[in-house]
Length: 517
Image (cartoon, rainbow, N blue to C red):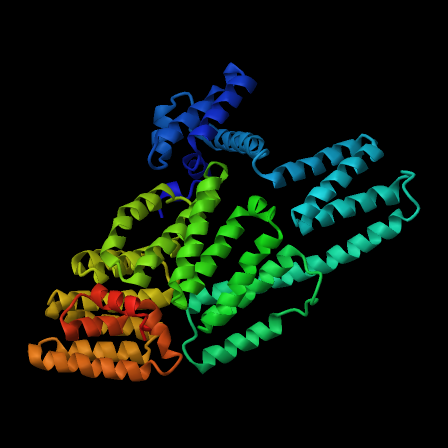
């Protein structure tokens, strides 16, 4: 990893928008003296560099000594965060809410207890509206502290009210903590495992889920309690490939924002993520019409909120929107049309390179490779598959890494690079076996490639039909069906048997509403 990826200050500066940079420069010119020029020089220098290079920084700022660099960087980092906080106070209600707590603390320290309580009362209303249980709890605890230590002449039942509020919030916090932990661990399990491979995975998953799912009230749950509950169920059913139940819980998740419309503004990222999961559910259930409808809702929402999105949400919006756009071409078999998105995706990945994670990049590369493969451009498919193979990401999404290598073999087979296929089969087999992901589908494909590389056309057509028959039988096993979520191998076989492009086969199935497998 390069130094530019390790230096926090450099990364922060590179994520700044033009407006944020301008705001910082104005704040500097207004608040600082001529003696403080070093850290603004450092800001301007780092802004111009493409990669962080300490020697180059010291060379460009002669007055900055090496022993000063650490302190000046810390000074600059603090000032940047201060100006960003002031800039985003009006855009992020949580920042403003926390500021109210700071004001209440200042007034309390001055002995102005009633003034402090008035601010806390207003802040509590805001926290309740935004479903910020943690901040609500903090406010109530502060109110209790003031009431127990000082004579405020509050109402007689004030102690009872605060006690009841504290008890209810404690229960909600306990549920939120347990449910968010469960949702997080389920997601982590998916990143490591992918979809359940056998009954052993299923038993392990069910045992873990059942033992960690807290007993929750049937009514009166807060927004975030329900969100994390739905998220946990989403990942549970997604790993089990029960896409109908996955759909039901993603729809519940999205419907929460209809019930709490204000949360679309205060937690934009969570709403977009909910829409993304609903899109994924419609994709796996082949519900094309609803998929296009939800994709339109997502795109319209992102466009409307574009000016107010922060960098984190802007990155998420890019990932989810373009994943949906590419998946729409997979659904209707318009792979060649989908290639028009490749340049945009590459540009966006570059634009968000400091904030988009490697998992998302991996998925994009695989989807782009599938677009090229489906359109018959095997050379470019191999380019993107090589990018996946060369990524240093350990066991992250080992399922996609395995299928990328299989598709890599098939693409070389299509190009008649038989000697290379023969050479690569062993390493691919070893990689898949190492990750314990050698399904019957993958095993049959590897056997086919090894056996039929040099077969004559007539015998090859028969071999394709035989493999298709075997895979259709294997697909009756629900655990083997996961292979078709990554690679529509049957449509490829049909294209070879019929002598037509893969996308033509998939397009015909889409029009005739025929299931893929």
